[in-house]
Figure (cartoon, helix red, strand yellow):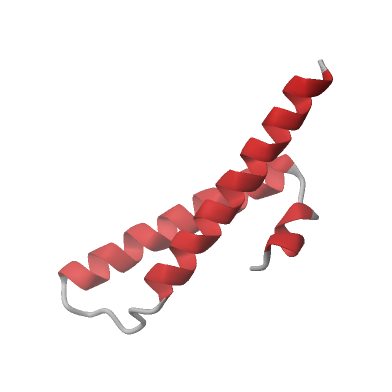
Length: 68
């Protein structure tokens, strides 16, 4: 997903998406360990999306802290 698409989601939706991506990353790691990995390029995509979500959540926390 692109950053602008993620910014449109609420905090709850972002956290749910983050959990989903972490579960998918875990599944990919298990597949890699069992030598059944079909899409090795997904590692990079998932890690980048996790980083994007964490960045957006942190930006929102910092914005809320500045407003208080």
